[in-house]
Amino acid sequence: MATRLYTHPIFLEHITPPGHPERPDRLRAIERVLDDEAFVTLDRVQAPEGDEATILYAHPPEFVDRVRAAIPDTGIARIDADTTASPKSWQAAVTAIGAANAAVDDVFTGRADNVFVAARPPGHHAEKTTSMGFCLFNTAAIAARYAQKNHGVDRVAVVDWDVHHGNGTQDIFWGDPSVLYCSTHQMPLYPGTGAVSETGAGNIVNAPLAPQSGSDAFRDAFLSRILPALDNFAPDLIIISAGFDAHHRDPLAEINLTEDDFDWATGQLLERAGRHSGNRLVSLLEGGYDLQGLAFSVAAHVGRLMKG
Ligand SMILES: [Zn+2]
Image (tube, rainbow, N blue to C red):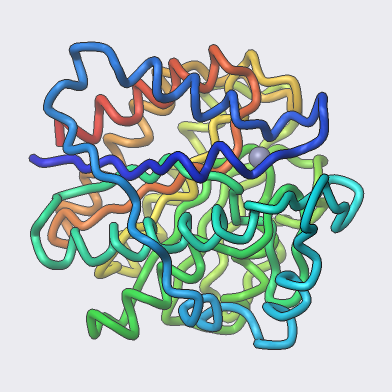
């Protein structure tokens, strides 16, 4: 199995205010942990320049113009209470999209079996017409549409294990049975969506976890809800919205996973990718705000991707 890693220095130049949890040091922590000799065979590639036109796969042009206009020339502009932009944020967001789309190309052309994209800003809270929750554009949703438009596939699954519900991805694919969206997340927690009753066109599978849940509840949600939905859907591609803020060290939530749980969940999704998707699996970094918890979790996740 060949695992590719996309990064880019521009991702460090999306600057958030002092004390903001979604900070450039997150990517430095990931870079340090992946420097270990265990990852020497990882196929490291600099993310390509993104194609702005692909943003329109998930967002209307008026919204894209609004985000572009919100990017400041200097300093930091506030988009909402949690979400900000700095002068290089546009280029960072577009490069994150470019990396995700390139990862889709890689798994369809056989340049890689699976790919991890270590990018920021994250994306899963960005709705069709709203940037929120540290996210400007919905990178995972754009990549799913990119696969459908450019690789002729019908069915894409997005599995989101970030501790927050991916309201944006749910919003974009609500009522679209060609994309399955499955999420485990703490509830109640920001952004407040993600109840079991939110099912879209039968293509939305939410598996909320009570605060203080741990490994057992998380794995049970996978075994009883997420994996059966994937088997039933038989996707041509699996995209992971890989947030690591359900780690027990994370300051933003109260779920008590360890890196072993991310290793396990990665293995389960690799197995489904083998069964349904010709091994095609693309993983996109979302949240994860404790630097040690994030680094150890990414190491477990990428290590498992490399084992295949
Ligand atoms: Zn999160």
